[in-house]
Length: 501
Image (cartoon, rainbow, N blue to C red; front, side, top):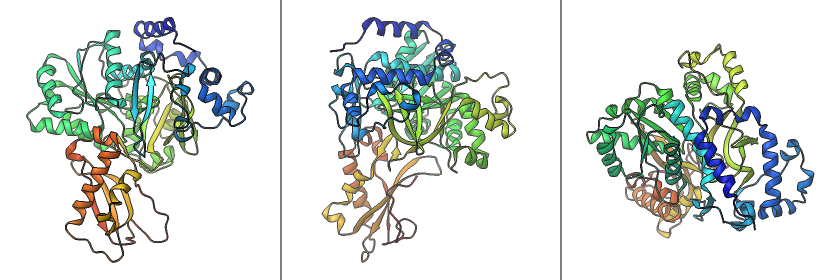
C-alpha cells in the first residue's frame, strides 16, 4: 500500500515558503506542460486502482500511451462514469485515503454528495493562486492586511480551503491576519469594527452576491468601508463589469483592476485560475467593445477571464467545454468539468489585442510600467450541464422539479419551468423561476407564494450548497406563473430548456 512521502511533502512546503512568487511562476518556462501531464498519467495508471480499471474497461494499455497526442485521445473522465462509479479509496493515489488529511464536499443533482479528499501539500498549488492575487493586485506583502473569509464554513470547499491557503501566505511572511466569520453578516461586521481599524487594508472573500450584501448591509449599519481600503476576492459566479463597477464604488475602489479579483475554482480541482490585473483590464475593455468580445469568445455574453499556470492545472477543450488534469489526492486525468469555455495562449491574446490597435498594457487602461505575467488565459461562461449558479451554489433543475411535484401543486402546473438568475437595478441577485400552468388553470393570488415555498423547502432539503451558501433572506425564489405554451418561456413545438443563462 502506497503511503505519502513525508520528505517529499516537506520539500514542497519548504519550496513554497522559501521561494519567491516570481520564481514559482516561471516553472512553465523550463517545464513542458504536455510532458508533465503525460508523466502524471503514467503515474496514475500504476498507482490509482480506479484509473487502471477505467482504462482496462476501455481496452487501453497504459504502456501504449507514450506521446501527448496519444494522451489527448484518451477518454474523458466524468463524475458519473468515474467519480461515482468507483469507491473513494480506489480513486486516490495508492488506493488509500492515508495521507489525505482533509476533505471537501460538493452537492450533486440528486443531493448525493461527492467527497474530495486532499492533503495539505496539495493546497500549495491553490495557495499560489491566492498569492498571485494578494501580491500582484493587493500588494499585501507591503502592508498589513485583515483577511475576512465570508464563504460558508464547514465541509464545503470555499470557506476552509480559502482559510487554509491564506494561513499558508501568513506563514510565508505576508503580514496577514485571517478572520473566519463565514457567511454570518453580524459576525463579519463585528470583525470589521473591531479589527479593520488596526490594518492598512481589509480583504473580503466570498461569493459575489453575498459580498455585495455585506457591503450594502454594512453601509446601512454605519460601516465606512472607504476608511478600511477594502479589497474583494470572488468565486463561484460570472458577473458583469458593470456589477464590478457598482460594488467597487460602494466599497470605495479607485483602481478596479487592482482592487478585486475573481477565482475560477471547483471542489474537485481547487482553484484552477485567477483574475489578474491584466485579465481584468482586458475584460473591462471588451465590455466596452462587444464586437471585439464576440470575435474573441464567439458569443455576445462576456465570460469570466482568468490566467492559469499549465504546470499546476492543465486545460484542454472538448466540444466547447473545459477539460482539466492535475495532481491531487484524487488525481484528475482529462476530467470533464462541464464548464463552457475555452483557452487562449498568452501570445494569441496579445496578437488579438494588437489587431484591435492595442500594443501595450496601457492600451487597456493599466499603468505604463505594468509588467504582466506571461501565463495563458482560460475563459468560462459557466456550467454547461443545465445548472444555474446562485450565491455560489449550483441549482439543479431536478431539485426544483421535486418542489413542483407535490400533489397540491401538480393540480395547477404542467411541471415545466425555466430557472434563471436575474440582477435587480441595485445589483442584487434574484433566483427567478417561471412556471407553466395547466391549460385550464388561471393564476390566483395564492398560487405563486405556495409554489415558491414548496420549491424553497425542497432546495433546502436536497441541495446542501443552497442551504449553506444562500442567505436565508435570499432563499425564497421569485416565482412567476405563465399560461400554457407561453411563447416567451414555453413555446410550443420547441424542445424545452429548464435553465436560461
